[in-house]
Every structure is written in C-alpha cells, then in structure tokens.
Length: 573
Image (cartoon, rainbow, N blue to C red; front, top):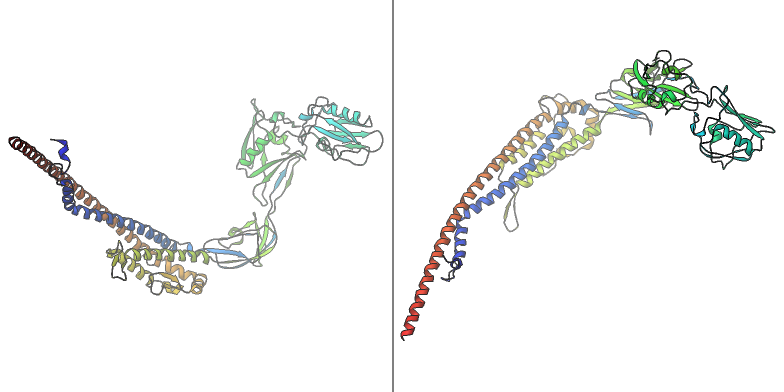
C-alpha cells in the first residue's frame, strides 16, 4: 500500500479524513452526553462534600450545647478594680457574693543550717604564703587589678599569694600600714602605725577589699567583718573546704541521707554542694536547698507554704552534719493563711490558695497575695453560654444558605432559566426544611420556662431561612437568671433540643455520604460505557480509513490506465 495514498484526496480529491471525523463525532454523541453527566456528578459530589463539612460543623455546635458543664460554668469577679487575687469558680459553684477578709498570708518553713561551715583559710597557721588569690576559699572571687590603701595604689594578680599582697600593701604605704592573718578568727587585719586606715578609691579595679570583707571604720585597725573561709560549692565534697570532715561513707566515698523520709545518695569524690542541692530540689522531699555564701550556710525551705515541718536524718559523720544541718540549726515555722468568709469565724489554709477544703464553698478557689478584704461575686458564665449559642446560629445559617444557593432555580429578565447543580435534589431541600421545623418547634418534656428558642429571644429572620438573636436582652436575662431552665431545654438526655438535633444531623450525614457513593458509582459506570464506545469508534475509524485508502488506490490505478490510453491514442494520431 502506498503511504502517499493515506493522504485524504490525493487521488480522489475527496477529503475523506474530515468526513470520517464528522461521522465518528456524530456517532460519539452518546459518549459526549455521558461525559457531561460525569462532570455534573463530580460537581455534585464536591458540593455534597462541602455540605457534609458544614453539617459536621453544625453538629459540633449542637453537641457543645448539650455539654453537661456548659450551663454550669461560673465566673468569679472581685469588686476591687485591678485586683491581683486569682479567682476561679468551678462548674455549679453556688452563685452569690463572698466577702473574704485575709488577716495573714501563708509562708514557708525554713531550716537554716549553722553558719561558717567552711574551713578557715589556713586553720593550722597564720602563714598564708601558700594561698594564691585565684584559689582562696572565700565567698567572692578576687579580681586582678588595683585597690587603694591610705591613698596608695596596690596592684595584685591572681597568681599572687595572700602574703604577697600583705607585702605589697606595706611597700605601697611605706610601711605605714601592715596586714596580717589570724587563723583563730579567720580574719585579715590591716593596722596603721599612725592615724586611721583609709581604704578604697573610686578608680579601684580590683575587688580585693570587698572580697576580704575589709571596710572603713575610722580607726587605725580594720579587720574582716566575718570569717573568711567558706565552702567551695562547685568543688567535689572531698575538696570543698568543709570544716567538718565527712566520715559516714563507704570505701568508695558513697553515703546517704534523708529529708522528709526521702533518701538522697551522694559521693564525696564526684558530687559537689551544687549538685547535691540540685538533687534535693528535684526529689520528692518537697524542699529546696540553697547555699548562702555570705553567711556560709545551707538552708532548706519547704516548697509548700504553711506550718509544716522539715525532717532530716543521717548517721553521725555524714554530709548533713558537715553542712550544719543536724546541730546548730535555726528552724523558722511557716505560717498558715488566716481568713474569714462573710464575717464568720477565722479559717486557716496551708497555702495562699483558699478553696473548698478550707472555706467549704464547692468549686470556689481564691489565690490571695495581700492581707486585705475583697468581695467576690460568683455568677453564671453567660458570656461562654452566649458564644456557644451564637456559634450554633452561625453554623445553622451556614447550612441553610448553602442548600438554598445550591438548589436555587432562577429566571433572568429575558426568561432564561438557570438551575443550580443540586436544584433537582429534593432530599437535601427536605433536610433544610426539617432542620427549620426542628429548631422552631417546642421541646416536649421540659417543665421550666424555656420550651423553645423563642423563649430565649431567638427566631427566624423575616423572609429568610436564617436564625437570629432578635431580643438580646431577653437572651441575657434567661442565661443569667434562668440558667437551670436553659440547661434543661438544651441538655435533656434524649428529648432535649440539642439531643434531637444531634440525632437528626447524624442521619443526614449518613444519607449525604450515601448520595456521594451513589454518584461516584454512577460516574465510574459512565466511564466504563464511554471507554467501550471509544474502543468501538476506534475500530470503526480503522475500517473506514482502510476502505477509503483502497478507494484511493483504485482511483490511482484508473488514472494511470487513462494516462496510458491517452498516450497510445496521441501517438497514433
């Protein structure tokens, strides 16, 4: 077969390819109609899916209205403007006013250990030539730089020994001021050979004088205001400069003590005072441990307020003894909060949060921060209730609007009829009508004053299928003064407004899903039919094209024969 003859009309001058296209297009009309039906089905599925989303949102809003706690919510407000008291009222807390007069706030109990638990700078000798400034076991680290004594600048470096500094003071002052250390008192003393000692200047760069607790006193002798040696909180316990050795440990340096019955393990070779304090604070002992570098002592404080004790226990020679927490301690009792309610007897509370366990009003919790009097008003939380109702109205109207728009049939000024995609779906129109009937109808079985939405000031907008709050004052009054009746209307187990609506919306959702499934099955079936038609048309195209090509071949042969005959007759003439 000549490939050239596949070009339509090459021999016949007849555009048979266009003819075949036209014939097959006509024969494909049913498939085109099915494709339009498929497109419409897909559009309907999309719209029904959107409707399902709106129905789900409405159902959520309805379920919020039947929540048991919604109409029991309460607000608690102080009569004092800008009050810093923390107020909370639980569900169903009795509404009313509560005059709370606080006469004393709660405080925490503290166990302050003995002071000066650190060893002296040099407990055995007054010689401090072996102590460098960088490693002095004192509460504040010394900075390199200069300080002033009697107007003379003294320069110090961190590698200098304390004895080197004493010599520098003597040299700078020409021997007028000398310095010494006493191991007995663990203090440094500066002595003037004549007149008073004057310390410091505005341009000093070293804090040596402050770190050694040396302050002017207007005399010729100035000594450290307190013992200098302190614990090194970051060093391991074995090298923390504790004045009392820790002996109640095993061969590996491990020991145990307890606070409020909670065991705390430690190891003198690996733990520091800082890590031990963190371990105490993280335990269930209920106390916090802090180290006071100024007084060189450890203090335990209850994490909870109130008159509660702190119990410590460890064998003799243990860490608690070395930290001054077993003898020489000072225990400061915590205070219980004291208050009265509505002018009644004095009540007590371990904490500054007074609740039903101390005042007896169920659900009312007041966290006080001042010994003052305030009046607290507990009322229904009408704001939250109203927001839930407004959300229901919004979602209800959203469903009604959507169904109205998607099922609408309109006529233009010229008489053209325009039908929305779901205009023929009578079922969803019935859903909208049923929802309107349900929300408008009275709820049976309730005995209170609220039997229908109209009793709450809600009704349909004139000329529309939408709900609206027509009487806002009526709604607010019902929520505030007839909360029980409103709750009964919405939350009755099976007969209440919300229960009935929730059940119906569940049925609608199932039907909506079924409609989408049916449309999807129809679309799939149409696709199969379209595919079958297209396969048949392709076969028909092949047959028609083959026939027209054979026609072209026949005409080609006839033209060739005609040419030959014409040539023969031309030669004879």
